[in-house]
Image (cartoon, rainbow, N blue to C red; front, side, top):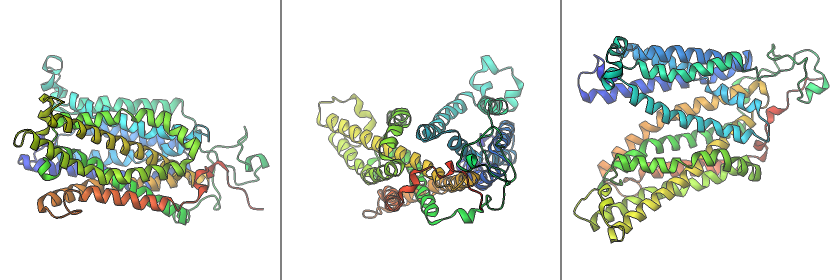
Length: 458
């Protein structure tokens, strides 16, 4: 897409402007994310969600009409602003669930995100520039010749349109707040009745500023969330580069097919872990304990992954001089090289699966804990907004930091841990620090505090 803009003078300019386009979206998603949460605390979850969906739908279609870089970056930035209300979804999920199904419903959010990322990438690649990709079908459609990236945006926006339709006609307000006036005893105990209004004007006692929410426990939880998100975003950015780099640079020497297979196999377990295993583990051990186990399990994984480069280099030496690792599929599995190549894949997949398990346990649990520590339902949106803001910021910083450190480490060839292990060691240290902080959290974070509405002072 960027290559077609007049601002790009040479192929070397493409990465810069593509990165600028991606960064503008992330920045504009991060900045208002806290305020979307606060807005939903004041006007209700349903209006905030509908505004976000309508804005996302309109700006995404406008993005498909891009003919210049200026138009693209403006529409993509606006799209990020409206996409920042994803924190409201977490609040809705927390409010419509109870202790028996909250872990399973919370686990659905990252699962839906992963499905959307995979499906969105496929739609973008298959439907971009349809007039040239499929001339027999779209060759005569002038609109797709003029706007070659409109079709994938239209198809992608169908899911947003479906969400907007369901929100308009099926979604009910989930934020139930007692009136400022006399509160019946039943409502003081958290039970809503037919006479309980939905979103009403809140008293100053019910409205808390973000600073008032930043209790020591809240600050610790948000810090853990930042450390986890930063480490995971660095991992996602660096893994493909690590797998594609030759062993002499500290990589595995895989081709794109090998990288895709390694990611696909490890990703197959996500559905089972999030929908089946995780809810059972939370029920048995508790949210906090699952978070601690997940973090502790990821620490050795990050330290161990870069050592696989030594095995990859050993396999190359056993075959011919500098034969790419991905060509070993033609070798006999019973040969020394074949056996060590099989061992390389076995260890790699074992480590990737262990990381995936730790990621699901830690990240899904921290999402639950953030909702649990919100003191009232009137502050649930603000709490999720702060988490969304910090998470989005790490998705901007993580790729830039890991890419810079990886390039520097393989260029300067320094000793451990400043060699090609540097990024992996940093990820392991971040997770280790977050585990240490998680061990100091009180057991009260296992309880959904917003389940009890604030009482009126006597």
